[in-house]
Image (cartoon, rainbow, N blue to C red; front, side):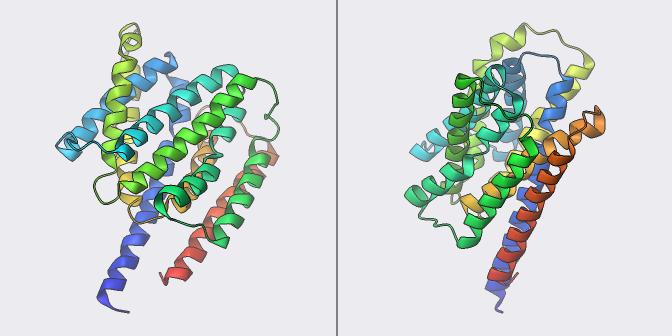
Length: 285
């Protein structure tokens, strides 16, 4: 194996590790949002303002070259978060997160159309197994009620897929520019709501964590990892987020998941692990 190939394999291993860490950090949002008794729009805005500062410090500049992928990615980033908040008000939390995480279906379609990244057989198999695991994980709480909330969650999945594909399309420049624009715009949109909130030291600490680590650092790691991993594969790795999210809530607050949910979580984790192992063998990692 030549030095160039070794460097490529090492870069891909590092990218997968960064995406796993991204999913880990993103998954902590559920716990801290539960601990913060603010309006969801205020949380999104305040977190966006702090994250925007993080991205400005990291990038050291505002993007001057606006591309269609940059605009669409920023819109997808904001849309995924706003639609998730909106859907949770109109349907069950399980419906909201499950339907939003139908995103791999749209990533597959958009990836072929805009990136020319065609899925492998292992990607199809992994997707089916992951969806089966998520049905077990959320099955007891999924309902057919809340039509508008369900539609919002589905659109949130489309928005999430748009963000993922656009960040992948920006891999040769800097994918984090999408998060910078999305965070700043989101912060401005919800600023009036933030100014109406009451603040405590705990609130400040939670907002700081959400903005600096859960959004800022995590999205920065994601923007690095997405350069080396195809859009669909990266999305399958990020499916760890909805499984880990209730785990932190259980460990801190004590909301215990049902046994069938634990089985579903194990299925999802197993599918992601197998996909990573098979991918490593295919690329000789």
